[in-house]
Image 1: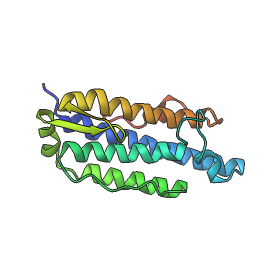
Image 2: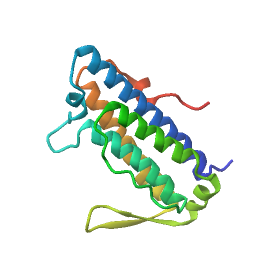
Image 3: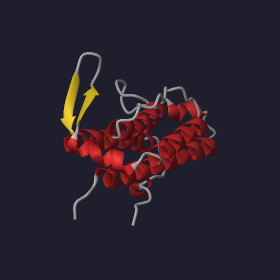
Amino acid sequence: MSLSASSIVKPVVQQYLSSLSHLVDKAQSFSAEKGLDEQVLLQTRLAPDMHPFIWQVQMISEFCARCVARMAELELPNVPFEETTYDQLKQRIEDMQTFVANVDDELIDAAMEKEQTVQLGPDRSVTFKGPVYLNHFFLPNLFFHITTAYNILRSNGLDIGKFDYIGQMPS
């Protein structure tokens, strides 16, 4: 049995966007229980040179939508990083889940034979063949940013564990 790109990308994206929404819910509940201003956790970083939790959530949701759009050769969605609250972040995640769900599987599957060029900063771009883009660029970056968001919350005392990170797995 061979795997199609859509059978990998769409379930993984939906699983981890759902997990991300769950983490945002946990952060919101924690903030309310502790009487913290929302911005405390939203602006928390693991290290001074790393982005805060809010940016990680924005990046993950944008990155997922951009990956699917790029693979399907659709216009990349314009999703500026404008959210400032937990509720706005949850809406952003939901919007990206809807976008991904509505992309035709056949368009994504065709990407495995195509090259994907990714801009890595203002002066550098890299071109990947479809499977390399998916397995060696998209998935590692997705997991890096999800892990970073999780670790920001965990390091600030949230009672979260592996299943909060992994979320609901498809059966």
